[in-house]
Length: 385
Image 1 (cartoon, rainbow, N blue to C red):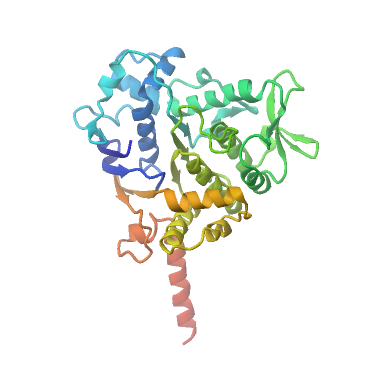
Image 2 (tube, rainbow, N blue to C red; image 1 turned 30 degrees about the horizontal axis):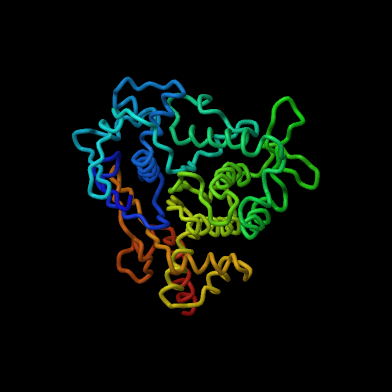
């Protein structure tokens, strides 16, 4: 999928999205970003979604509204109207009724969605099962939680107790950045001492249960477990069958230094060949894209990108930065909410001199800093007289 066009989906009257290797959605709350991300998942993985729902005992009785409630969540059955909603993927129509009625061999999942509600996936320090959720909870949350549960019980939970950092998962550069800036040197471990397994933080032998972690750590551990699945050992390998990664609001609860560690993770996912889509309220992600575009346009050395990311000069960081600067593309879209209507605008140039404020203020993420600088400049000017 290279291009997605839609009309009349929820509060979005129309949108025309061309995807890059990294595509970023920015905009206010309740502006339709999550709905559109779930739509991308539905388009790519409809067969896997319907089979998974059926496997866990869910039945929408061939009614579109019932399916919309099961997939997007309770109360979301009105976002799709067969009379007005139109979806076009690479110039071909996408008919949801037709897709839902198809029978045949199950298609493997191709998009890995890490939802904004990921903190809900851990209950007393252990991932919840798919059927532990209410019927009206969004499919993306249930499926992500099930992925984590199966991952811990099969790939990680059989013999080893250390979940992070592990020498054979992720690159050491990324492990060190995450470990230092998010966990402060603590280990994420599997505690088997009680009657039920649980994830704990181990700080020099002190075991901290889930509820005493910092907010950022509680938000990040489910994200970390998802990323762990996407970056298996083998350097440049992807997870089997997965070609797309969607991460909603990765910055939640994190300090700017911790967010900087995540920026390298996004680039590593791209280096491995994933198409990455991120929704965010953090200006740091767009600052990274702006810097990459400027460095590439200026034909500056990849060293500058390594300096920005605080990466030591080595074979890995050289390959990473050269791949990103020479081979990867970036797109940014602004979801602007105006009363009950949302407009979706391409602001990929991130040109600070563009007369369109949606572009120059990067979808509103730099609006306050621009305004505060202007006010301070006026205040200084007034104080001189």
